[in-house]
Structure formats: structure tokens, C-alpha cells
Image (cartoon, rainbow, N blue to C red; front, side, top):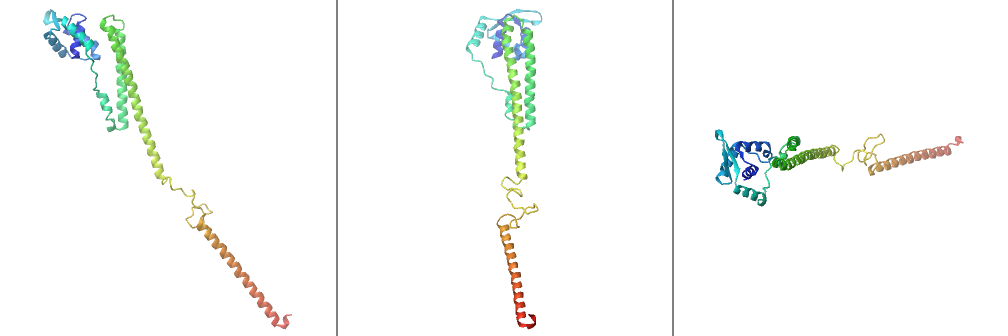
Length: 261
């Protein structure tokens, strides 16, 4: 119903033809409520039938000039003061954001970057419009600047949000890459629980990793050292007993041979 009330508001400022109303829509109201030529003329017919506007004059080629009636003025005031504005709940651009997970991270960032660019372009156009109407003293221009300023600030907010959201996706991808790198490194080293040779395992004197019980540190190596020591001690005793036996034999031979003296 806002198109009806938009036309009542325009006609409250003075009589106008359908062509005049279309021009005003294209130059200002289209930024908040676009309408086609056919929609405008259809609504003018309905307003006339409802007694809210009337044909004030007719010109050549069927041109009609409309003006608001008292009933139309009352309806306009009721709409402005008593009817709660609709809160738009549909947003095609934001709806797509919910499903950016179906795209690659790069595609999602590209979508958001495009939204930022589109918002910046819209803001630039609205700033130019603000400049064009800044010195227009008409009622529509004076209050229109308030609406234009809203659009400028909204586009700035949308631009900043889109850049922030794109950065969030980039950070998410970087964090995921870091986790993958850490997992790959842990797999390559066999996990944190198994140490590399030299991290508590024995080594031989030439620096090679010693297998368990190969003379390295630990119980196996100590056991072999004891065996080696025991073998050496046994060899010493064997050599000493042999020398004693030979000395005993020599003394016996000397005692038996008188010439030995």
C-alpha cells in the first residue's frame, strides 16, 4: 500500500499529471520505493475511484492533472501517524551469505568483496544526489535529504561489513591451513610420543643408534660389560696357574738331578 500513500504525499504538495509523478519517482523516490509507469497510472485510477484524488484538469492528448481530496489528505495523515512502518525482512544478498559454505573460501570472499564494491558505488551515487538537492528549498528536497543521508550511511555500513566478513573468511582459511600443517608435521615425525634416535635411546661409541642390548647404555650393555670383565679375570687366573705349574716342575727336576746344583 506504500505506493498509494507515496502518490498521495506527492499530490499533497500540489496538482500533477501522471507524467509529472513518474518524473519525481525516477529522480528521488525510486531510491526507496521504485515504481513503473504502468503501476503509477493503475494506482491513480484506484485513488480516483476511492475518492482520494480527483481529476483537476484535462489537457491535449488526454493529459490529466490530479489533485488530492480532503479524504485523501486524511488518509495520508492517518498513514503517517497511526500505521507502523513495515520492517523489511527479506534480503536476497544476506540470504546468500548463509550458504557461502557451499562455495570455496576464495569464491565466498569474492562474493563479499563484490558486495563491498556495490555498496561503495551506491554510496557515491547517493552523495552526488545529495549535492544536487542540497540547495533545493522544496519540501520534498528538504526532507528528502534526510532519507538520502540514511542511504549514504547504510551503504557505508554495508561496505564495512562486507570487508569485515571477507577478512573473517580469510582468517578462517589461514587457521585451517595452520592446523593442517601442524598435523602433517606430527605425522612425519611419528607423533610426539616416540623420540628420535638419541632421545633417550642408547648409542654406540661411533654415534650410531644402538639396538636394545647392543652395548649401549641400559641393562643389556651393563650385563655385557660384566661378562667381558669376568672373562678377563678368568683368563688372568688361567695364565697364573700355568706359570705356577711350570715353576713346580722345574724345582722337582732340580731336586732329582744332582748335577743341577
